[in-house]
Image (cartoon, rainbow, N blue to C red):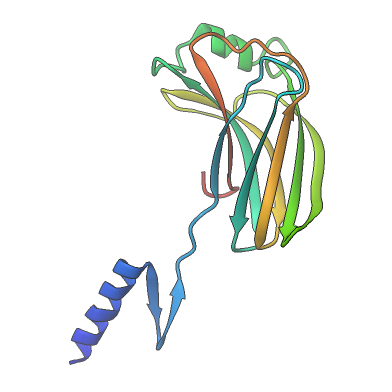
Length: 170
């Protein structure tokens, strides 16, 4: 009889997105993962998105240069654009980042920064990644705004995405 109860609790947890702990249930929280296309071709281009966090944690922003043909690692143009040029970390891309906490109709700025991105922080066959910044925020609803501060000619055949995610969960 006990085994049937345990099985039923596990089945309920799998179907409903709940985890059985003792006599109560704890909701499994969806990770924060926001993906926004970003146009770097013209200074002043801005993208915005709303997102919600459920736990106080460190979150990261990352640029991803995604190949439209599926081969980013072997692109001489993209590697030359993003990677080291002598003693520098590739083309520097400055971004203005603002994050507001939304409470009802009120908005409160929690982070406002200018970041100068450079180098490559990760790679797959299809994309090269570049870290932008990390920041800590509490549970709640937020809006992020990212503005490109300089004109940039991204190599042909690539699109740029901005990713927001848990710092430790890429």
